[in-house]
Image (cartoon, rainbow, N blue to C red):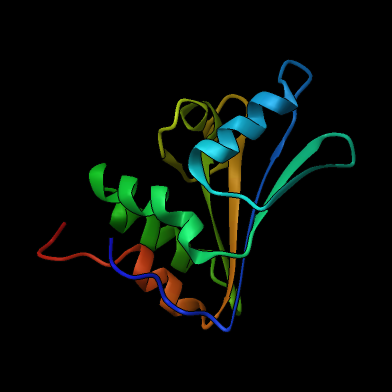
Length: 138
């Protein structure tokens, strides 16, 4: 893995809607399958939120987007959703529960909705470039 950038500020927030048929504990396990989190909590009784302040918490996503050859898809999502020093991408919730990084374009692509991963960093472009850096057309 290429060395992560040094941000003067970094915050990752992952969140998803908790449906009646879902367990918050199982969703939290799915979060932790994807990202090393420092904190998780339930907001408004129906939204599970996870927080990390470490760029390195994205290591599994970094590795899997390369293994699955979806780096260019992730880059497009991060650039299209860029606003100031914040961007986000979506993952399939069911795939995440099994430890698989599967990018989706819209919440509706996943029957139970998606996992929204928001990245805040100054400067954000360094994180985008690090996550989507390719060598020899990977």
